[in-house]
Amino acid sequence: MPAPKVMLSCGEASGDLYAGALTAEIRRLSPGAEVFGLGGVQLAAAGGRLTADCAGLAATGLTEALSVLPRTWRTYRRLVQAARAERPDVFVAIDFPEVNFRLGASIAALGVPVVYYIGPQAWAWRRGRFRTMRRFVTRALVIFPFEAPLYREADIPVAFVGHPLLDLVPAAASRGAFRRNHHLDPKAPVVAMLPGSRPNELRRILPDLVAAARLVRDRMPQVQFVVARAPNLPEALFEPLAALRGPGAPPRVVESQTDAVLAAADVVVTASGTATVQTAIHERPMVIVYRLSPLTYWLARRFIDVKAFGMVNLVAGRTVVPEYAQAAFTPEVVADDAVRFLSDEAHAAGTRQALRGVRGQLGGPGASRRAAEHVLDVATGGRRRPAPARPSGGYITMTL
Image (cartoon, rainbow, N blue to C red; front, side, top):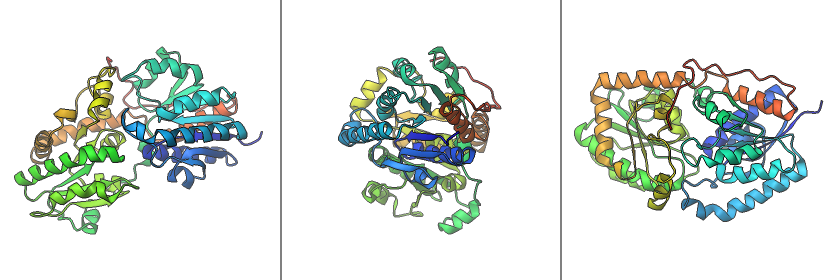
């Protein structure tokens, strides 16, 4: 039997991270497999061939997406042409519904089976997307336990594979070594700031994070700040950090070392998204924030069907960490929560225990391998038998 040909599509840093891990596992299970498509440095590093580079394609929100629309359309057409020319055995869409819904439908029309890995948050808003997915998705692979029953209700074949970050988060480095390497006081508290990975996120979030940091420093002068910087972001986006220079230790900006930053932190203030799960895996108390353009938020609120937006709180089924969006996100509330975590050890310990429970519901190690088994099973017409995920916490129930 010839080695399978797998086409992938992802659109941002977290999707590329998962694509790289998935590609590595596909190539371990089927050494001759050919993997290609839309991705970035992680996909390429794992041995995938880039048909198109996803850097700069992602934008948060409806109005924000307009700025990248021309390039998105060109990329979509190039990928359809590649699928038509190369005839993959399976197409794997990884999140990124702005492109992957249209792309998946077009490639399915060529007779190629479609696996949707890490589906859109249709359970939170725009439930009609389940009906759209049913038309072109051969199998959905989900990473949160509460998602699988919702896909089954929508009559979409689904498997819960667990969260790939459980394997991708490295063993915690020495807090002392990190602090020495970055000239931090080993005895003073550290607050990590994760302002997002997209330029429009930083523009709306970082200035108020800096204002919150100043308020924290006013109440706890010894506190230190470390900013986890995503790669490929313009230097100008970090200019608001200049307001933190002066009395106290200057903020440290550390690029492409988010896990090391989280391991060294006592408290984390993070933009909503994948980073919240990453922070939960490290069991660090956090404050989740988010802000969209007013028009995008107004439109989204008309469709959103859940009370929480932080993934940690959604997995837990209750509020285990504070979260603030739009007007509720102010420097004052963020500073109050950060100071409470730093000064109230019982409160911080209770939050760490709750986050340990969240981690326990993410499916255990091996998510990328299980996903690869499913991809190859679809590619070979069902001749492989993927192993199921075994979440230690079981499924949770949610009222949406």
